[in-house]
Length: 153
Length: 425
Image (cartoon, rainbow over all chains, first blue to last red; front, side, top):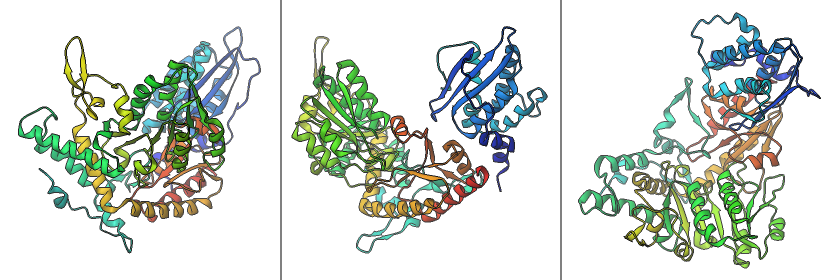
């Protein structure tokens, strides 16, 4: 029933994370926090992190409202980053960014991205790249505890 | 002169006003773009509140200018310049007659509604608004009728007051009555809301303001292609609209202003065409309307706008309004059965705008899905963020109907929405 490109965009994993987002909660005393905002659609996502002295992300969560793509992206991102080091998170951000902005070519080696590979379909929807990357940009700002709000514009 | 082309192009929209035979298929043939395919599906264009498509008649008239008599206006003595000037100025007269202005010197060509409002805020506003004064707008304003007044208020230390609306998306008139007082120096409200479709009681709003000697600007961007506008009957002081929402080109718009206001207002921009004499010591400004038209205008755009008005008048605004209302009712009924769908904007009097929110489904996902059905709608905050806040939604999906849309297209929209509910349900 769904067109091929649509099916690749809205994969089961994405629909599932949209319906029941993981880590969709507040962290009372985060070590790092940032607000993300997409002025084009009014989506906003807040990212909370607890990072310990060894630079390991002990806890990460998000709150806010957004489309299925942005919510699923935040949900999957928080699932994957928990337990990772800050360096690993930064590396994954770069890889994720390359994936959704179509920098990896036709048959990319994306094994390291794991479940994040479901966002490959976003490449076909330039208008939706910002939805997928909002959580990631916000997370990067939180890591560096930048005060300014992330906007996708 | 290319007057003949009106006949040559043949506006196919034949309407019998007495029996109201609205031949939408013939009208559709006037719009080449409606034959376009999107993702392999027939285009269903339901984003008319953002911009309307252009009939061949408008496209031809615009092309004709570039093909046959492109020249600058108002100063050449050669034949092409004279022809261009004549066509440009006759477009002004078409606009004047369309809104029943008193004179053509009350019709200023601008880039669009936004520039028209900015012109009034900058020129009239800077001259007349002082510290402690109040300006009234409404909750349902487009950003273009909020921000220019905010900028003016910040500069002048004046206060911006906002008329609240009810849950149906209608202005609460009693609140406006309470708000207006001797401090009020300007009222600027939208005639018909782009996000809700609400048609405001502008005549009442104007009459009350005038009883306090307060001038009123109407943002008629969404009204002008649905409602017959008579500026003398409304007695509005200013009226702003854009060509591209009226089946005309982008980049051209109108500011109507009462001549006594316009004469007392300083120029908005300086440059060519707006002067009558320049020395390094002093400049004498040109008379109306040229005082407000510095630089070479969008000549093709103005001619295209004139053509668009001719086209719309050929069909008849009453006929269009009647037809679009039927479509709106049909669509409103059709979506009402859909699970979790909430219509945003349920005013008694509406233009053909249907904004809605599907429970737990974001408008962007709705927009992407419908795109694959060939259906173009608008999703987002529609440049009315304060209004979205009022209804407690981040964004809405909006289908807006134009004179060429059909019930079959509404059915395609509704079927698309059903598919979305299946996938996300």
